[in-house]
Image (cartoon, rainbow, N blue to C red; front, side, top):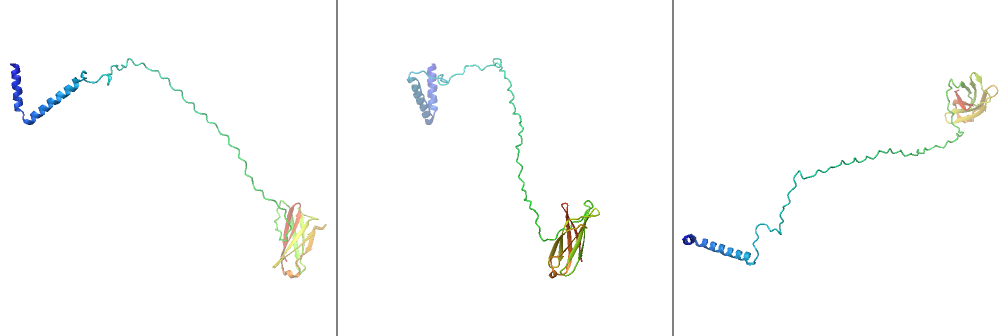
Length: 210
């Protein structure tokens, strides 16, 4: 009775299907038969789930916190810092300094510079001039600390409008030195004369004018 009912229901369902539904059901049955034949036709057992040979099962239990042994870690020693070494300054050779060659003073017919007599030196030149065309004469003496100096050399420079003249003399025992200009009468009128004495490495000059 049960099988008859099943058959009747199956026939009723089949008749209730449309032609497209019947085709789809037949295709599904055929595909199931083919798959069943491929699976069971080789004699191997069907594999269900994951293949134990391909996918290994993870059976090891993860350790619990109680099973983890504490690892004692020693503090790392501090790296030694290199000691700062003071660098000694390298000696530097002093730069050579240019030394100018000292030349000995040369005698030239130029006007001697009149130097003012200071109180420390205590020396002064007293000069006078007698102007005459072509015969200009200077007379001078050197006085140091109130005393005349004898034997001191004197050089006199005569200044004219267009030229210069000069002469030399030595102080006599009275301390007087006198000489005549070398310019001659063509020199013209005399403007001034400078008489200079050399004494103890110093030069003492005095000026005079006509």
